[in-house]
Image (spheres, rainbow, N blue to C red):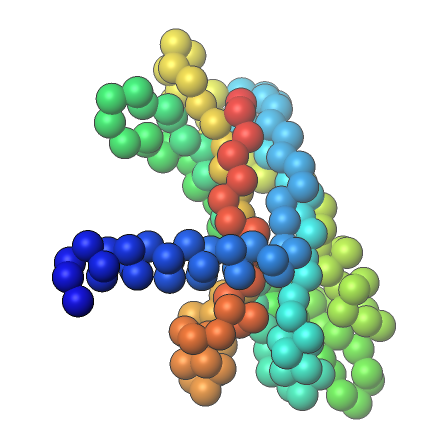
Length: 181
């Protein structure tokens, strides 16, 4: 194969992998930014949906982690955009067979829900995320907020982590969503 053919093949594979990831239904529906006491605050609406294979793993006792990443970016016309503030929120979901409840756990709380939909619905609205102080920004520049939600495949148990390298249902992501500030 010539180099041009290899490049085309790689580009097709790359585009195909992104299109199949986008079909998972996990989306960032809204991001709102406000200033409260000179602190940049962000609220975010997330729609979590996973493949039935991930749901099956959950009901069979596998704990699954999800990460919400939110970044404040300074726009730069001539070079790479600069990250100004960053926030990552991780939560875990597992199924407790004895109580037949889904347990949602983050660093501060642990709650139980009768079904997976209820657990995801509870996590769908994230409020009052602090991204930094307004005093650290150059008000002459443009800024934007970008957000994404994803299943943390790097935290899965080893057999599923290996599977996640090859199967898109184990790598659902909303992709980065950009919102002006």
